[in-house]
Amino acid sequence: MLKLGIIGTNWITQQFVEAAAASKEYELTSVYSRHEESGKAFADKNGGQVYTDLDKFFNDGDFDVVYIASPNSLHFAQTLKAIDAGKQIIVEKPIVSNPDEFAQMKAALAEHPEIHVFEAARHIHEHNFRAIRKQLASMETISGATLTYMKYSSRYDEYLAGKDPNVFTTTFSGGALQDLGVYVVYDAVTWFGKPNRVHYYATPLRTGADGKGVAVLGYDGFDVTLNIGKNTNSYLPSEIYGVKDTIVMDNAAELTSVIYHAADGSTKRISEEPDDNPMIAEAKDFATVINDPKNPDNVRHYQTWLHLSEIVNSVLFDLRRKASIVFPADNK
Ligand SMILES: NC(=O)c1ccc[n+]([C@@H]2O[C@H](COP(=O)([O-])OP(=O)(O)OC[C@H]3O[C@@H](n4cnc5c(N)ncnc54)[C@H](OP(=O)(O)O)[C@@H]3O)[C@@H](O)[C@H]2O)c1
Image (cartoon, helix red, strand yellow):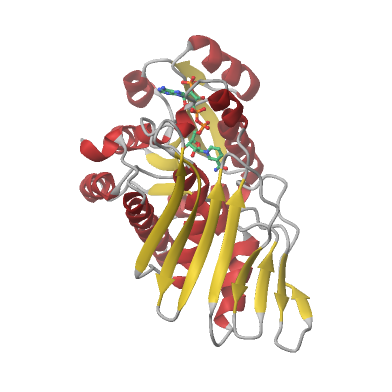
C-alpha cells in the first residue's frame, strides 16, 4: 500500500483521494493545507496528519507519493520540493507553466532517477481513450479532427462579479487553454503526434487570460481544430475524420460514448461504460509503475507519459505565444 500525501483541498483532491482508495493501492497519511481549518476538515473526512507548513509536510510527513492539486503556477516549485524530498509525484494538469520549467524539472529528475513525475491527464488512462487509438490504427487515412471541450466554470460567476479567481488569471498560469485545452491537446498529440504548426485565436478576459478560443494544429495533410472554453457550455460532439469513415465522441475529454461510423454507413460502439470516478484508471496506472519501477513495460509506459507531457507542455506554450498570452512564470 502506497502512503499518500496531498497538496490542495479542493473538490478535485477529494475526487482523487476517493479514486486512490477505490484502486486499493493508496492510503492517505498526510494532508497539506495553508489553513489548519481546511486541512482538518479534509483529514476528518478522509484521514491523514495535517501540515500547514510545506517544508514540514515534505520533511516530516510519512508518505511515499504526493498528489499536487494546487493552482497551476505553483506546480513547478512544489514538484521540485517533492523531488528533493524523495517523493513520487502525481501533479495535476497542466504539469508546469512552460518548457523552461519542464526542462528544469527534467534536470532535477535526472539527479533523482528513482523518482517519477506523473501528470494527472486522467482521460488518457481510460479504456475509451485507448479504444480510439486502436480504431485509429485501423483507419488508412486521417483527414482531420474537430475536438471540443467547453464547460462553463462556476468560477466564472466570481469573475463576472468582479473577482479574479485563480483559474482565470495569468498570475496562476490559468485560462481556458491551460485548464481545459490541455485535454484536447493531449488528444491530438497522443493520436496524431506533435503538430508542425499551431494557431490560437483566443478571446481574452480582462485579466489577460483566455476565456475561450479556437486552436488549429497543423499536421502533414490535415488540420485539427480545437474548440475550448470556460465561460460557455458546448454540447457539440467531437469527431475524427478518415476518408468516408468517422469516429464520433460525445465529449473529447470525458469519453462516455464513442461510435465508429464505417465507410459503408454501418456503426460500431467502441466505448465501454466508464468508471464512476474518472481518476481511478490513472491512480492504478501510476501505482503499477511506482510498485514495480524496473519492469520493462512500466519503464516504457512511464517514459511515454513523460514524453507526452513534455510535448503537450510545448504545444500549449506555442499556442499561448500565438495569442500573446504571457504568464509571470514565463519571465522568471
Ligand atoms: N483532473 C481534473 O479533472 C481537474 C479538475 C479540476 C482541477 N484540476 C487541476 O487541479 C489543480 C487545482 O485546481 P483548483 O481549481 O482546485 O484550484 P484552486 O481552487 O485555485 O486551488 C486548489 C487548492 O490550492 C490551494 N490554494 C488556493 N489558492 C492558493 C494560493 N494562492 N496559494 C497557495 N495555495 C493555494 C487551496 O488549498 P488550501 O486552501 O487547502 O491550501 C486550494 O484548495 C489545477 O492544476 C487544476 O488544473 C484538475
